[in-house]
Length: 365
Image (cartoon, helix red, strand yellow):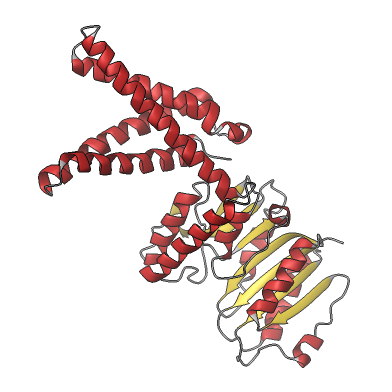
């Protein structure tokens, strides 16, 4: 029997946990969904789980309700429910005090749209649902850092999301804050949807830089995990980046060789040779990224090849301008040795080229 697994963490003590549970029961009964509701509350709160409270919800064929105040037990039960194939979908939310019904309806409305992960994470303007507001806090820095690892995902640190549990086949989760980041790293997903949403309360909490460091450490652990799990998404993203670097190096070799050959042997003026060499390296890089680096993504790529070629050209030219600008500023304004300035510029341009092309030119749908 297939259930929907609904996992909720209540951050603050609620006055009437039973009322909030009844609200959840109403949401799922209206949708005629069999559901397992797992609720984690802080230990020691007024409504921490006890024998009486759990006996109020003994469960039935239509629903199973469990309440926890021990994160370890909550984690064990959650993993078991995911792996025993009784739950096809898992809906996870973070509630401060009260259940926000609208979030559940928005997520559930996308359950059969072909996406494996649906994220309710963007903060948008009330006047324009497609305009993303810039989050003016340190959490946004953490989110930007995480997006460097998963360019297809705009909100990798969201706490409200819906996933198809098939992407977690034989994956054991360590249920901690920012669980979505772990799911993105260890899961076997291909299609993700970020839903613009006006949150009734502040979803993102301000984070100190030490917290950003903790997220960086977790990502590093996920990279280590991927060395033994080549079907994990973070391994796939790592391979994309490595191939992109190799292709970039081949472009540098072609650029230098063609520049030398045209100038020294064909007698072409060196600036004209440089233009031809740059164009040849751009075409070379695009071709190999198209047929090799991102070949596995061919069935889900957006647009047709010539549009991707135009896109790649534009971003490459921007990258060249960025490299020259950094070289000039670091050398002339800050007195950095020009070769070191050039290395910094090359690294910055690589990040720019990879992230923007991975996000736009070779993005998934």
